[in-house]
Amino acid sequence: MNLEDNYGRKHDYLRISITDRCNLRCIYCMGEDGIKLLNHNEILTYEEIVGFVKVLSPLGLRRLRITGGEPLVRKGVENLIGSLSGIAGIEDIALTTNGELLEPMLDKLMDNGLKRVNISLDSLKPDLYKKITRVGNLDKVLKGINSALRKGLTPIKINVVLMAGVNDQEIYEFLKLTLDDPIHVRFIEYMPLDGHDQMWSKRYLPLNAVKEKAAGLGFRLNPEEGLVGNGTAETWRIHGAQGTIGFINPVSCHFCSSCTRLRLTADGKFKPCLYWQEEINVRKALKNPLVLQSLIKQGLSLKHEKHQMNAQTQGNEQGYVRSMAQIGG
Image (tube, rainbow, N blue to C red; front, side, top):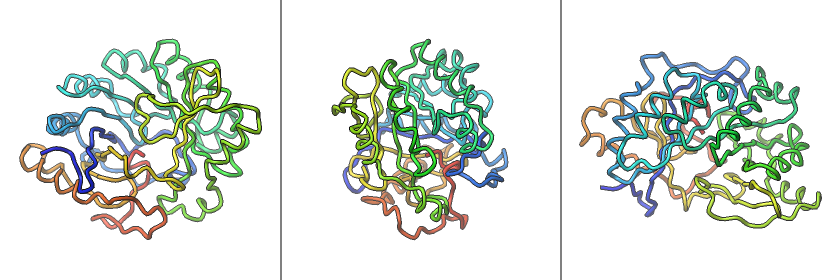
């Protein structure tokens, strides 16, 4: 058995959500009051996560990304990374974080095998950043980024969800970040998930607008290839810049045909696709590798050829649609 689906796509990349909790309340991710949180006993233990990866690594799993919620709010995440980095076949472990807790934890994370970090940052203006996140502190994020640069944790990627009328006036400032430092800014189209359709229709902005803005500002963009862990992004480099610019276009130009991603939710559900609601409960099989492999095979068979971003989605077996905070993006 290997991690191949019905359309010949081989999967070597697993995104692991280790918590549904977050220290921010971003406007496109959850309501102001947050989400209904899982009970602690519903969340996978670190031992269960390690066991899951040990079953998949002989099948071709090579890359891991730790996500949340906000993964750094869960105690002992550096120990999980250390355990995962010791599994045969695992070549790369990355982390997606909002960056507010990164600076004081960075040494422990790197010492335990963290190779790369993606930081979600949607504004470089303190007031707007706080408006988008509702409770955030931009200074903490910037300190985390600068610390990662000093310590050589590269490539550093900054994920920017672009929203019309919210942060689209900051395109120039984000482009400038790539000029003098090895920072890779990735603009992400706002996706119509989590029941936010009304807000999405008002704020959605195709990413071609960024290219047009860059050209209008006199930046010359050259196509770039070979950036580690950049399989979903169309990547460009401003002439002479140290960093790059990425465009992730799941709405206007999906990348389904080249998708190699699988997901494990914090409560032990195996999701073959972010956008469809199908998922398999694998927690009950974590102590039986043969049963687990059978469930993984079943999950891979559920993966569609492509998503239908605007399709009417159906709830999962619990009867609700997961938020991005629960899936981990």
